[in-house]
Image 1 (tube, rainbow, N blue to C red):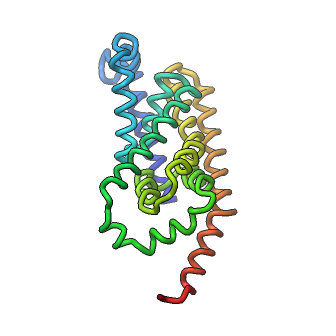
Image 2: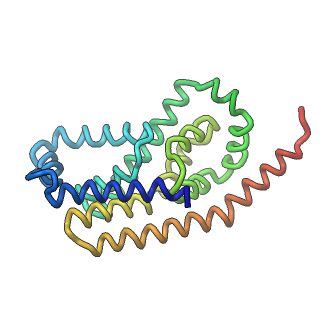
Image 3: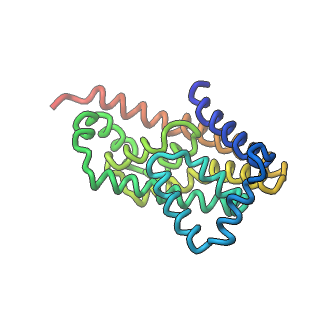
Length: 227
């Protein structure tokens, strides 16, 4: 239950924030005015700023749910989900690139055993296991990206595995944002259904594949002769 507190709290805060704008709690300013006018009247500036800002935002560890919610509000449910997923994937690649460029040798030395374990577990079928990790709506996206870079996992495999794993949850929050924008309760219900499906799928794959693989590697590592 504790692991679910963060995503549930984030969802509540986001919903309250957008509802407060929509219901006019802050005066005549609404979310339609703030977002739609920005893209309609200043689209030549808004698009590059939005794309670049979103990539940097997620690369620095910003909650991808916020981006998905905003994309859903701006572009609609499935379009917003796809755009948000792609931008978050590029953010993950930016994080990995920064880690490779900066080196982080002290982190590699301090956590050498953990890094070797991650490398051993995820080296084969990397995209599948990254997808499983992304599907589970808990944990830190930033930490996963940094760990993937420190473990020298193939960026292409991490990228495509991340896109597949991100997509269900990004669609969930995009449909929530779209439902609020369009006053469409059916899209809000759709987002809740997708939350149940994506979480169930992620937990199933974790307990019927990834967990056993991790346990096996830990057991082999524990019985490995010291050099």
